[in-house]
Length: 179
Image 1: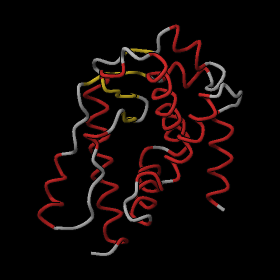
Image 2: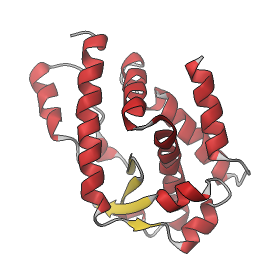
Image 3: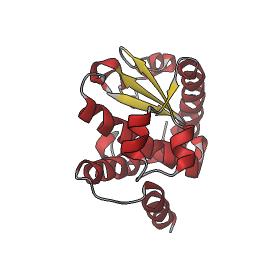
């Protein structure tokens, strides 16, 4: 099975999983706190701040469809059990172990909200398709995926308290990617 065969299958499977997880976690999610909004308002527009919801969990689970990979002995799936957080469209799921470290919590939240903006601009299906394509083309290396590079780069700038608009930068870099 080649990459071109795997991409539509993986895109659909991840689309279903992200949608299902979003619906599940949204039931217990909360809006940004006043303090979180205050820290993030200079980086994200009001619509994204109002749209984003936060849910917490002990540990992020891997999708059930991962069992198919061990049977096929093919592409290793992304291991979400090691993740600090994951973005499910507009619902940010963060591991509870970070709740008592405000600085780290805010950095993680910022990073995940960059993904909210990416998803808002591209739509979930297109974002997943491009993300998976990058992941496969880069030998399944998480840190080689453009969307992660973008989020980590902006997170570093945020941690240095540099002023910028996430939406402007994300849009500009995505336009350049499309060229």
